[in-house]
Image 1 (cartoon, rainbow, N blue to C red):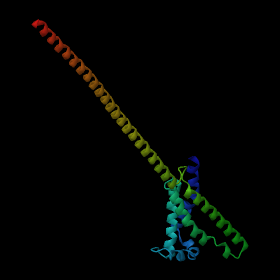
Image 2: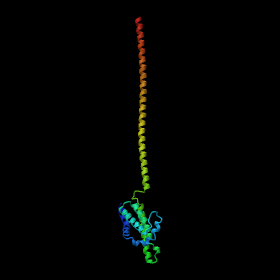
Image 3: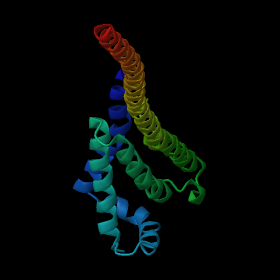
Image 4: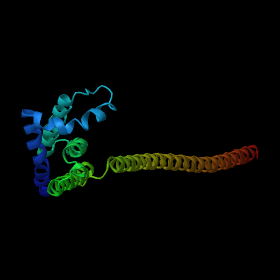
Length: 213
């Protein structure tokens, strides 16, 4: 869809730009990241607690996932990764509640709200299935389609078996009927033969009697 092809690069652009800048020069972000990154890393086994490493990892995630989202490759996973990287970035970089100057607080609050808005857009992108429906729905649809196909195949097989059974019954019935008809005809011919034999015997007897006279 054209809207998705345009919207994804637009949403990803800020992360690609920011991630590339931080990777080139991470030092300016270290003081702000120091307040958030190490405490978060302590709850993630296997992750370094060094602030420089954490800043670079976060920047690499933003650059890589942003590029994937912009290209439309694994867009849902990429959007989810960006959402995960945006939370510590926002908490570390825009702590408006710590600002004492009204103007500075207003600026930080604006940036904080902007990032919250970006987070909302990323979450929408993370659940966007491109009109294909969720994985659960697609699986259920495939299951229903498979069941319907199996039922149709079974019905077809049953119909064939029924037709074969009907044909067998018909043939058996026809053979039985033909055999019965043949037996009746044989009995009729037998009776005719016996009758003719009786007539012949009577004729012979009469002829003998006539000869004796």
